[in-house]
Length: 259
Ligand SMILES: [Zn+2]
Ligand SMILES: [Zn+2]
Image 1 (tube, rainbow, N blue to C red):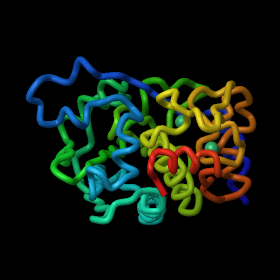
Image 2 (image 1 turned 90 degrees about the horizontal axis):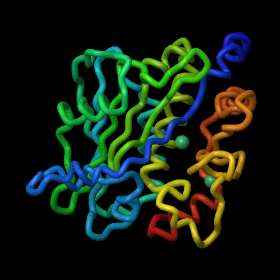
Image 3 (image 1 turned 45 degrees about the vertical axis):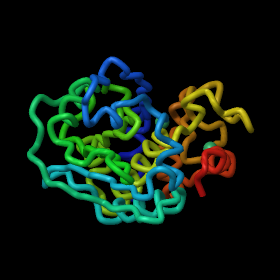
């Protein structure tokens, strides 16, 4: 692969960031969107099971320049459908928005953007999840590490699409693999992986070296925080495939009513 060398140079520029916030203060009385402003992982069971929500809507917002690939959208949809019980179906709502000003974005700014542009909220028997494909980088990025995506509320996540395109040089083989991996990984955090709520009691497999990530190296939820040289990016590059959930993480989801 001709692009190997360039990727090796970028190996150190890769980290998944997990923001686990409890936004109880935000839950103002009578806020119709309060159900979507809870802490990360708290809606895992509601997403996985059919009671009380029989339907799931995934809203994806992006500007024309930062639309994810069709392959990644399909992979993401398949990943969700494989794990959840939603007899009423999983619906993807795609919305084209303007590029958002003020990049790079802090997570507080991402939350502001969400509050401005999100249109789908949990209501009746339909649970809504929001994904913003960011036109700017994370303000946490440094010369040696970048944030690819963050799951930051019970039904909210951001994909730093600008960063993914930069890292892959928009390579049409690699970009969808990286997009799919980050989408599925961040959604895994929304589903409570790994041990987000410290309720991983049936079979503990949180990596002591990488908080809230899985100890199994082949797993989608693995993140090597101790040895960046053997990062997820390198694994992806070697295999040119999207990592899947290992049986332990699938067991966690099944314990919460998932498939
Ligand atoms: Zn992560
Ligand atoms: Zn796992």
